[in-house]
Image (cartoon, rainbow, N blue to C red; front, side, top):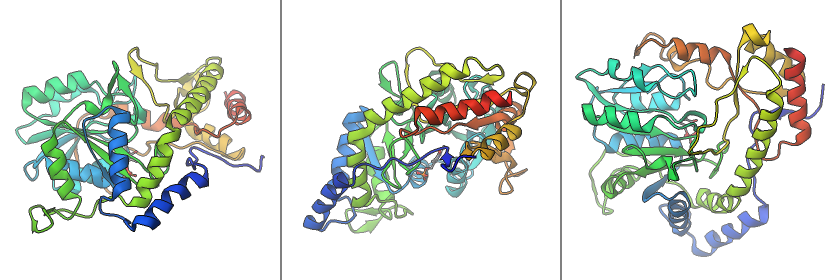
Length: 371
Ligand SMILES: *Cc1c(COP(=O)(O)O)cnc(C)c1O
């Protein structure tokens, strides 16, 4: 057993001097939060770097998602069609906004919502679709858009994993009415804690900016049951520094993913999501699916073998949200058999810029020994 522990992620930390330079600005201008100059600078830089028109920053991705749901003023108790194969934040956000999630199955091929199973879940109470670009793999935005148009539904994307992902040279964040990205420390790009919404029009941004500031309008009257969702200057400072390194981070991740793929090609019984033409990926996660009949061992056995070597891949996303104590038997759902079978077999391998070739070799060695 090795002493060094390899976890599924390791947060990116820029050179300390870079961060201190930003902190010096804060000490000079004494703006600590409430849309200060660094907040403004980061919002603008992200808008141009991601090629999105209307965006705003939040103190975390979860509250950003709640603001996205609130700002669309969906009728109370309306139903929102969403996958159960996601992080629990997606479901919590719908519930916390007084709406009802309805779980739709996902696709075997890339784990995103199965657009062919959305229509059968639509009722007169359906108000929105909330798909997830899980692991940064793009949902079928075109089909989802068609369904939304046909039934007059809003579309909110949980794009927590999809920072910098593009399809046909267009940011994935420009699809749907609103998209939410997470800037949590463990995500591809981070502001320690943080998040962002991208809107399809300016009015949505203006209103959501009030929601994140207690629903206050023009510093006086209160027009929404809002909350405190503001990003601080210290978070924005981290974002400004990290943004300088994002291309380097993605390139290093791409290299590691390529190494993994090269080695895994020799191992039967491990399914990888194939790259689609026209998609620019961000290499945020590296999920592998273990096909026990071919591979010879199941996910739990493989996970134990990894843990014995001090390697800690994660079962993202298992259990399914529909199987958690909080939500089991409480949410209307379609047939979730694909979601269940994926959740039982998926494993995310360690992936972060500092992961060395030797680390990758070690991880691959465990996989080869276990088959
Ligand atoms: C991380 C994550 C969130 C929540 O983002 P935070 O910034 O941690 O609040 C929501 N949905 C998904 C799919 C996530 O992975």
